[in-house]
Image (cartoon, rainbow, N blue to C red; front, side, top):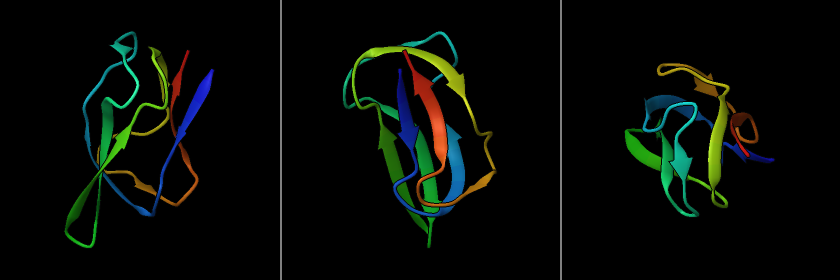
Length: 70
């Protein structure tokens, strides 16, 4: 199980994957928006998206868990 965490504070602009999707290392999962910049958050290993902890529009802080990969 891998927790995917926010690298910085910002708003969840877009969720690119859904629960149950297979992902590979480095694949974009979520795109954050901060200071009018888009920051992609990528998978840190291959697996299946087990859980999404955020919704589009949510505000997150650095270190918040965004998704779980199994």
